[in-house]
Image (cartoon, rainbow, N blue to C red; front, side):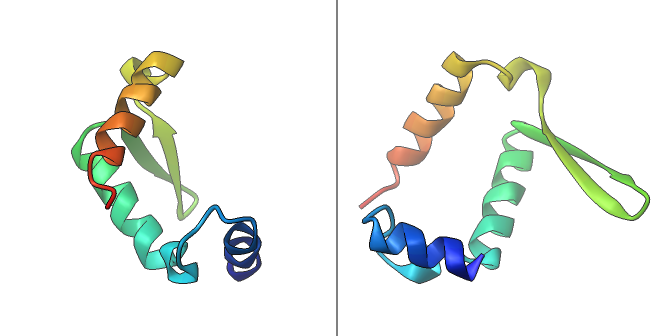
Length: 73
């Protein structure tokens, strides 16, 4: 994860390296579960995350992206 964050920072895709952290990812996942965009189940002790069927299309994902972009500074 650290290497990926550094690469994205170098390419100008991240403003701050800490924007790509495990905590940020976990918080986003919780939000997407709250918004019912993703669902999960546990299989052999591993959390499997997947898109809710009604969000599994490009148009709906673009709606989510637009909603998130409203919070950007």
